[in-house]
Length: 176
Image (tube, rainbow, N blue to C red; front, side, top):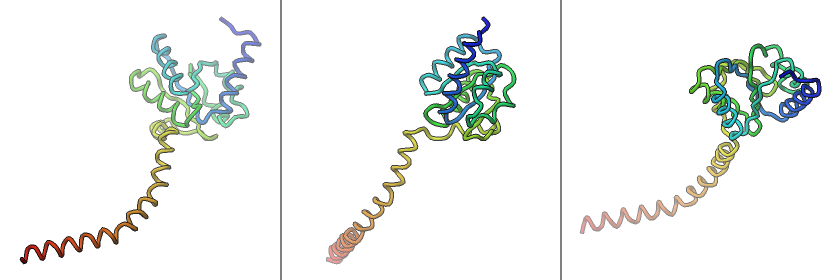
């Protein structure tokens, strides 16, 4: 069914709003996927905080104008599904990578992060970025390490004294 002008404007506005707030974007070719597979991809995307939409390339080009994903404009050719990471930069890359491992018909074509176009080979690197919870856990571990080291350092003289007294005791018991 052909879209009228109002429908096209609403799609462009919706995608533009999502693109303006997104951390990263991936355009993947979906030629050959069945309806059930596309539905499974959409469900997985919704659960992982990824905005996934099949949009005509001309409308996508208009939608990403003025956003950091404008660098993708010239690379949008063929039947593409757009995936925008809403919560963490690696979410869309993880979604496309994991789904393409199960279904070889889904192929990443264009990747953009922070206004830069990345080679498609970088999808593995982008997908390995930690999500928010993992990043916070890593930060807390880094912040906690100096405090733990200070506590161990302050405790070491006492522990050394106890070990020395225990060694003297053991030596006296062995000589007696």
